[in-house]
Each structure stands twice: as structure tokens, then as C-alpha cells.
Length: 257
Image (tube, rainbow, N blue to C red; front, side, top):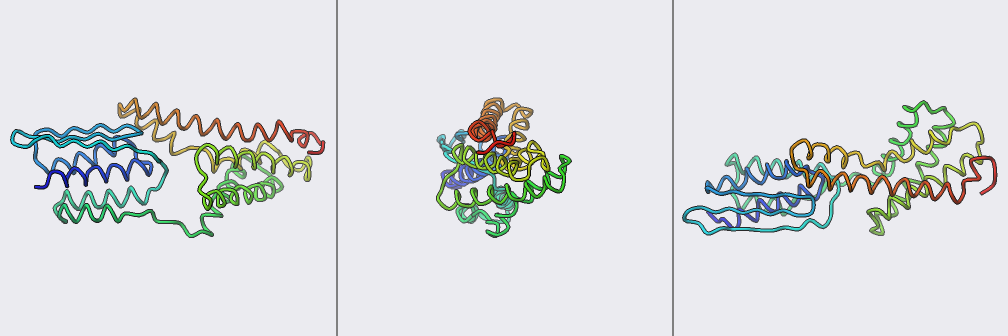
């Protein structure tokens, strides 16, 4: 068996999964199943949020060790699903090692149609506004604020802005537009309901869920790192809205911007 190719295959699978939102224990489990097909005595894997270390060795096989840094992270369940399918097929002897490696190199995210991607945040915002007891006017205001949110997110994707800067910019836009709608519609809308509903598409729900799951699995380093990441994202959202209110807050009490 080509142990170097096996290690590269397992490392590529782990990298794709970790970059696209998989929990660290799931990454370790997938890589472990791939590397165990070597039938070597020693298979060691360590996965943290920012890197992967793996090593295999045996009595007559020199150790093979790889380290892979993870520089970007996001959420794309389609990539995780594709990697899992390839891993299962290889471990089930349905495909050869070289075929598994080549298929992993061809794994790509499945993009949503641009129009659908534009309206998803809008639908989420309106749905949460309704669930929080918003009135018809609250929903109307959320539609307008949500259109701004979707426009900013679509524009940021085109020019390549992401991370905390995007969170601050989008939440600032949400806060500013909500204040404008309060000024225009007055007491007909509940500003709190509109703002809370509008920022829900930005809330790091997946990061929080993965942080809890990693912690419960005993991966405390990754769990704490994910909790910190989610906290920073939530703080950036709060900062953006807070700055908008601090600068243009007179609009909430009937003043002008």
C-alpha cells in the first residue's frame, strides 16, 4: 500500500470537512476510518480548529506524519456530505485509494442559485419576526431591512469581504435601516422586534452548536475555540447595531437622523 497517498487522502478529507463546518470529533472519526485501512498498529490523529496532525507507523513501516493548517472556515454541508460518501465508499472497498483521492480533489461546494441565496436571509428574518409576535407592520419593516441585509451580503460576497468586518458592516446597516423605518412608520412598528428578526440570519447558530458538541465529546480545545469564535461573531453583530443606534438613535424617539 502507498502509505503516503493514504495519508494525503485522509488529510485532504479532514481538511475539507474542517473548513466547511464539521465537528472535530467527526473529522477525527472519518480520518481514523480511512487510515485504519492501512492495518498498521499505530494510527494517531489530533484535530483542533486551526490544524490537523496525523501519523501512522508499524513494526516494519517508518512513521508517516503530516500536519495541515486550516486558514479558513465556513459552513457548507454539501462538502461534508460528499466527503463522507467518498470515505464510506473507500472504506467499503467500493473504490481504490487513488480514485478516492482524485474524487476528494474534485469535491466542490454546491452553490445555491443566486436568486435563492439572495432571498434566504430575507425569508429567515421575516420568519423570526413573525415568531416573535411581530405585527403586519413589523413584517413589512423587516422586509425592507432584510432587503438591505441581503444586498449587503451579496455585495460583500462579490468583492470578497467576510469575517468580522462583514458582520459589523451588515449589522450596522440593519440597525441604521431599522431606525429609518422607525422614523418613517412611528409607533406602528416595534423596533426591538424588527431588529431582532433582521439580525437572526447573522447569528452564529452552527458555530454555537458545534462548540457544544465538541465540548460534550471531550474536545475541549476545539470547543473553547468555537465558543470564542461564536462570541466574537455575536459581539461584532452587537457592535454594528449598537454603533448605528448610538449615532442615529434619535430616530427611535421621534427625532431626525
